[in-house]
Image 1: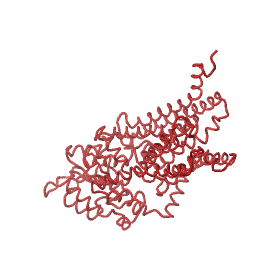
Image 2: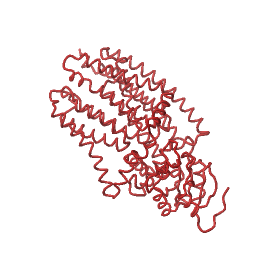
Image 3: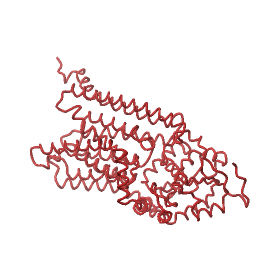
Image 4: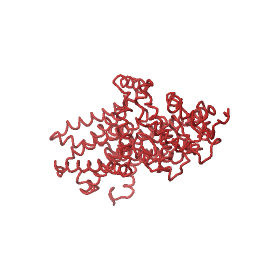
Length: 561
């Protein structure tokens, strides 16, 4: 008679009991994520945020230019965010929102996969099931589509940060693990450094996630071969890996003669202008506002983090032997808690508390939830059948809640399509229709303010590098400021660059959408007003925004009310 270990049916049964609920959780999460993103792909693809508007406009400029963020088009997030968007548009089509929507979907699925693999690597299959379900809820329903479904720097950065974390976790496997070799561990550490740097080159604050990983490498594990010298070599390898992407980017910009632009918009602008309105009073007021709005969520996420920390400290305290060996045995859980702390710091450091900044927190919080709750659902001391029942019960309950959330999102999308332009067919936008009717495909336009999605939707090229016009305006969203304060926050030389761009590329229409940018219209600035008065004629208001047409002689065409 075959033993259970030799019986194929027994092995299949064991695999089903051990992995069935976990794989069901992953499948449910994938289906729910696809369903959520499909709302913005069918029956038409549409942008979901201002961020996607200016990112896509910057992509247009890069495709027709030098493929250099901060040069072809200006913004201050990391260059990898813009390179990926431009590449997607180059492959999928410049004049469609499908490439951005598909890119956002791929980012969402990548985040799901990495959260799942991380929780599995650090904790258990039950933890992976919990983590992937929690992540799905956070990104598809807790955050608005603008922040959770849209493409932005935080989404890209956290993919690299999570992948870096996963590789370090695999490098920390015990020496007797058949899946690991010294050569493979060394490669994991090096590539983890590269990915950590790529996270920072997608969104600057994501670099903070490299610090807990470096601390884990310094701490090491309890393998006999883990000596002070071997850990020092590993840290150096991680640092070298982290330097590679920055060196490559610096060489690219230096070779093109645009190193100054890279350093200014990647680092100096944020320090000197973007952070200029932030002080202790404004930070305290914003923090109180967040506590009033999201107190329950903050308590839940914070409680999960402290639950995990308490478990780590209990196990370290109970460990028989030196404290360092106990700490090393809990390195994965400890680093998970530190990553949560780092994500909160990264998301709140600038004092903005924009919801899409929480992408950084929620990616890590999902892993924390898996690590903190799995021991209650499927403790290691329980039988295989017991773990199966506990995990399956949780997965089925969470799946039912996600179905309710999916129904709510569908109703919300249907209602918002009646009034909210971000949910409507972009080609029905009044400004887009006006541009299509009044210009030819080869003519360029310029949009002042936060309506940069007009470029892709109307299939017209931007006439200036300033697809995001806060730089010549001196506006720092969303801080109220006097005109004198804003004048001090204008990027030096940006207005002259803008006028030079417009003079060279001669846009047929200028849409002065200042209402979207705290009421700061292009016509409010004397230098820019003089340009409009000299070369353009006011035509009409479209969707509440002034529209100007370029003069083709001394006499203005009649206004087309």
